[in-house]
Image 1 (cartoon, rainbow, N blue to C red):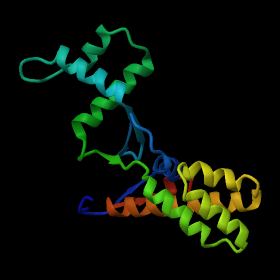
Image 2: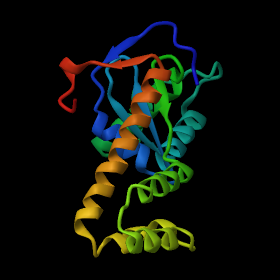
Image 3: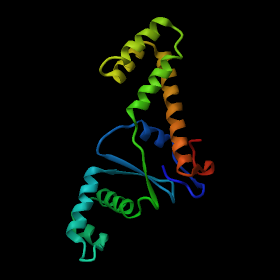
Image 4: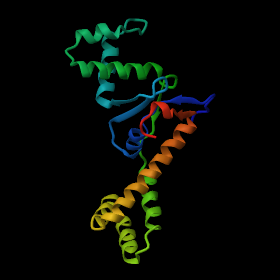
Length: 186
């Protein structure tokens, strides 16, 4: 956690952050641009490409003319932009960009446990408790809810609310206040 010096107002896409907080995929890293509120995805593949460009095109002082390097390579416009984004993040991480934390399975599991406590039907409650106490808890939980569409919808609302709370807490810890005027998601 960073010690924020002052509160920064940004037009952040909360729904996208909620989605990112729910992900737990290897090979993907997400960053928040502290100047614009833009969210950048940097894949491991793009990071490796950038490292290769640094190795190949850096001068003796470690400086690089990224645009010259990119013009030498046979890249699509989107690939070139991904590398530019990765370079921006690499050179300004901690200043202009901060890493967005990946989803944690422990928190997701805790959300399921807490949701089960809200269930009034004793049979369904037992079924859900049994589902999460076996291997494949997340899949079992979703499968058990599939025959209860109303409860399933309640679960999604509950889970999204929890994720949203975590996103807002993380933003507050980073000294970021969501700019309501610049965000359609509030």
